[in-house]
Length: 411
Image (tube, rainbow, N blue to C red; front, side, top):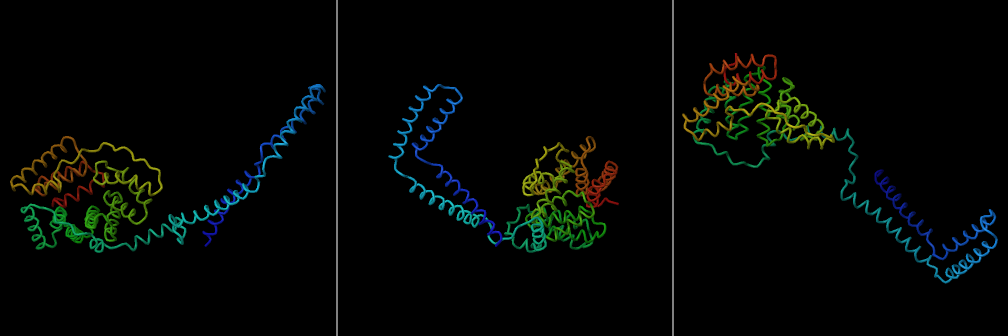
């Protein structure tokens, strides 16, 4: 009620200003002859003042008085002949003023009803934060998020690749305590588009490893759940992200998805701050940097922050080792052709790292690829070399150790 009283008083004040301006304009209006009479009378007084100061002589003063008096008589006669127009214009002015007042008040109310939110309380900062917290606490869980997603057609996979995945599933089922087997299954289930099965396998990896589960394990588990829910960060994914960040505050993927969760629950200010820090921390070639760069300016605008995206800095070249897409594409080849292709990519990546060096992600990829090929001795040697190369870099070593465990060469 207080809001409507204030709005009504403001509208009345605006209307009163308009009426006052119109009435003042009306009161200042008059016939031209009346204005001429005032000017001529002023001229007569000016002649008397000039005569008193000795500026003009008596004869000149008399001639000027006679001419001005003649003009006064003519102007007075014209004023008497002009009709009195004071009634009608004043009535029109009043009607116009009242009409404008009604339009201002009624228009303000109608505009607010169309664009505003009648009856809705003021959304102060504290209220908005409370609403965001309530939305975060009451949002759907993982199962509900997946249930409301439309059914997607299965991915087209080569029969040979599907047979390999089926074999891996049966092998893992017979070895329930094999963490590496479940980790490989999670990767291939994800490659197949079966994200619920992928994050279930990853959950088993974390369960088996217990206290030895790495930040990367938890971040990957959360990422698989988020992919299963088409980008939505559920409470279950949030808990996995929190576990990753508790173990490593600098985990890039976990920080990216934590920012996404904050944006989804009405806290773009926190999302922007997390993403901006993550973007500065880099590395610029990390896979989570590109999505941050693509969204951070919009997030800054939502947070009310004046922000300009810095230019991309040159990072390490794109990884040359085999990734999940390469492995899926290799499904169309014969077994020998797949092995030759993978070995060629691995050799090129190994040669480049030996000669030019590279990021921790590239070293981790090389270790993982060698593990897939079954070259455990070579993977173990690369693992030892990577440990020396990144000695003292906790985040890089964690990434390398995670790849070594997946490859089965970690001590």
